Length: 423
Image (cartoon, rainbow, N blue to C red; front, side, top):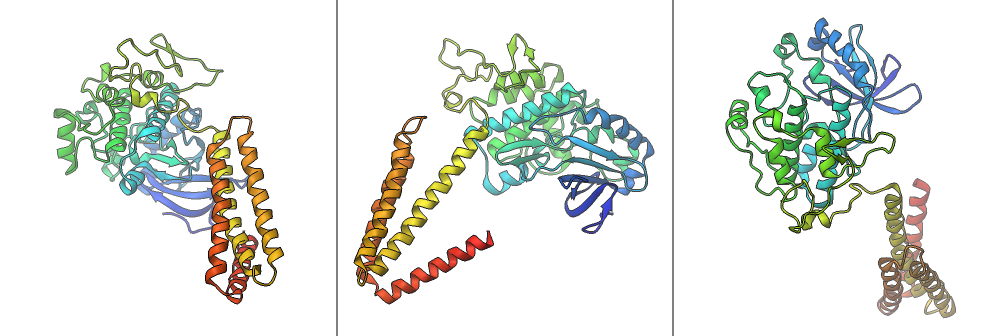
């Protein structure tokens, strides 16, 4: 069904197949402006269901109104012809399911960012009148630490006997709410159930209702309590509320966002239960009971309020990483050059060391006098780099001959030039 690399589909040039699911194949593609997008080409058995396609066509315009940092929004669709497709924002990252499977359970600041991101995504989706219906770890892409929800509304729009009979599974056992398993309509409360099951999996590395045949997992969802052992105390009470059997008493997505302290745009203020979204309720007098209503436990109190790093923080971290590499790399080259010149050109050796020392001391001075206060790590790295360079120079001068050092220096310089040219 999928096209070869370079094939055009409407206004889009397909680049490579990046995934497949019950409803179609997903291709990385370029739009007419040269931007990368994700093109989902529906499977033939889905494309053959005219009723499902008509329902999807009606939903697409609503789905296109859903926007947000945590949403892979629908940008375009072509549902006529033999190869109907949807176009969404391309998110470069790893599915949450893959991340947890490879690296284990998540916690701390990232777990809070994940909870806030999913709550914000559901608030945007439900606010536009859309139900995701298949929220699960595989449909959450983590890109640079930011969770992004994909495939919202598609399962809801394509729900039909002919589609499901052809092999597409609407929902995933363990993330389907009890009322859906028992045959009721999937509503916003079912997405809230899936939100909690997804977070429970992320926080523990285990499926909250265990593994096994789909029927066995479905039975546990309806009749057993979820396994939340290992979920942090600040999060577990909220997840229990979301995983209750009765959908009417689960919190809404907007209430989740409010209680998790999700910021909202100043142009769209929202109040839920008397609490503004983005405003964390005050700490109770008991010093912080284990409830996310107040988010007042010591663990949450130690987590940065912003949820995810700001662009300025990201740039600062990147600059610090580059600076550290420069201090270490230039120190190694300076020590090697000074050692190579020590025997025949001692003045040059001292000049190289002095030049490096001036550079790192100047950088340390900038760190001490920075506007945001002394940057302790920066000063430590600069001082450590200076001391380490002198120590390395003495060691190399003592152990190796001048010829060996010159040869090593030439090799290092050559490799550096190749890397610079390749970059």
